[in-house]
Structure formats: structure tokens, C-alpha cells
Amino acid sequence: MTLPMLPTLLFLACAAPIRLQADPDVLSDPGSADTAADTADTAADTADTEDAWIVISDPRSEDADGDGRWEAGEALTITVTMENTRAEDYMHYPGVLVTTETPGVEIPMPGGGWFYGIFGLDREALSMQVIAGAGIEEGTEAEFRLALNAINCESMPGTCLGDQVLIYRRTIGR
Image 1 (cartoon, rainbow, N blue to C red):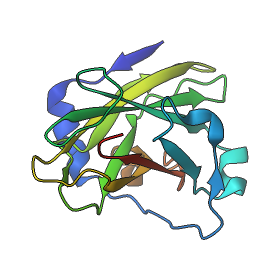
Image 2: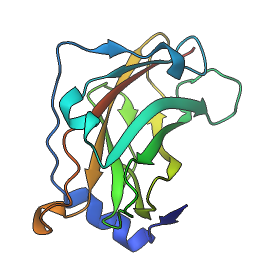
Image 3: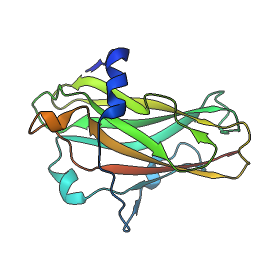
Image 4: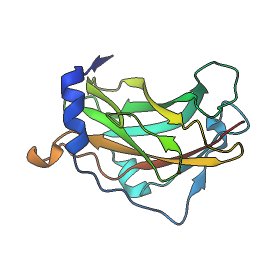
């Protein structure tokens, strides 16, 4: 079971620094797609994820009207699975920061999703929203970086979660 975070605390997440890493050896995750247009790649240091306290996986999405096509002007909800791999509770605001460099795709504040905490050995779905701008062309592939994050972990030694990043792609009009 997770404890959702208060909206006022979500605002603090915008200032939380994270390090994103690019990995040229991106691994495909064919089991993550809920439509043929979805793709997910894992771009994480595997040594970090093997010993990780919190792991994110299984990115998937659903368009706002539920017809399976993400269209210009429509919101898309991206959901990942967040898992606490230890018996110890993690109560340091774990979350996922979502970014994109795809022109015409907007990421509303706070730019991701966070929990207050996640109990030991628990697994929960965490969702965040992105929006395809009204003028974006059909067929444009949007790429999202979903980075595991904990708010203000730099000020609390031992609570930072590493550099796990998932790359998620979804095509406009599909």
C-alpha cells in the first residue's frame, strides 16, 4: 500500500535535482505495450537496478477518450509500476519525473508523479499525464524519459534512489 502525497508537496518536486543518463545499449521491453504503437526501453544501469531499493518497470499508457488512439490535443496517462524490493518501508517521497524533447508535447506541472512513501515489498501503479499539442502532426513519435526520483534525497544521506531511467515512446494518431 502506498500513501499518496499532498498536492502542496508535489510542487516541491519541481526543484528536486535528478541526473538523467543516456544508455546507448537500450533494451527493448516488448511486454510493456498496451497497443501496437507503444514501445518501452530500459535505459538503466543494470548494476544499480539489481541492488535497487525502488524499481520502476512496465510503462504503459491510455489516451483520454479510451479509443486507443492518442490524438492531437488529447491527454495521455502514462503509468509505471513502482516496486519496493526491500522489507523496509521507503518514506522519502519516491516518484518518477517525466521529461520529453518532442516538440508539441506538453508535460503539465508537477512533471511526474510521487508517493509519500511505499511500504516494504509493495508494488503500486504510479500515473502521470502528458498532452499532445493541438498542432502536432499525426505520425509524430513522442519519446519520454521516466526517471526514478526521490524528493530532496540529497539532504538525507542514504535515501537517493540511483539513476534508473525508462524510455517510453508513443506515436500521435496511433
